Image 1 (spheres, rainbow, N blue to C red):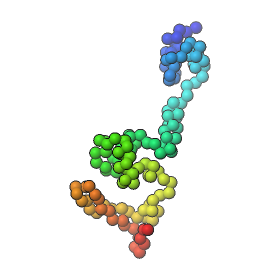
Image 2 (image 1 turned 90 degrees about the vertical axis):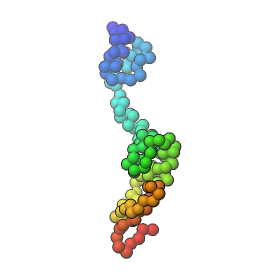
Image 3 (image 1 turned 180 degrees about the vertical axis):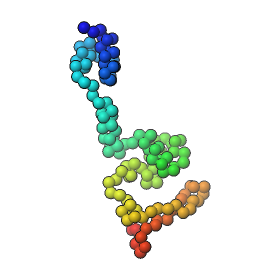
Image 4 (image 1 turned 135 degrees about the vertical axis):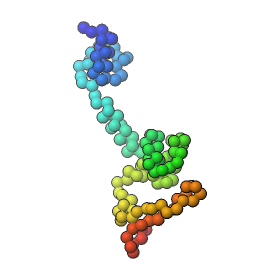
Length: 134
């Protein structure tokens, strides 16, 4: 026979979560079963959220950083999402199954010029001779 404090210590040692408000009988029932894989549950929920088109600010900031967008960390989530959509770098656009035309036809985008202190960029598309993208 354990005290409630002893049962809580066992629950903590086994890796359970949300056990602090349980009563004695509930704690005893909880300890009869192995703890769930909380990391797998969290990852599954994150995948469902991403499939629904929702991204955290941290995920959006990572895309913005990799794309070279300046001062992305100062933007609010909605503004950051809008900026990424404008530049066609939003994760929902990037995760489309079909690769973009540049990848399908071996086109490469090369930055050739910058105007107004990197306010706008000029890109040149290089690919096969005699074939232009639509």
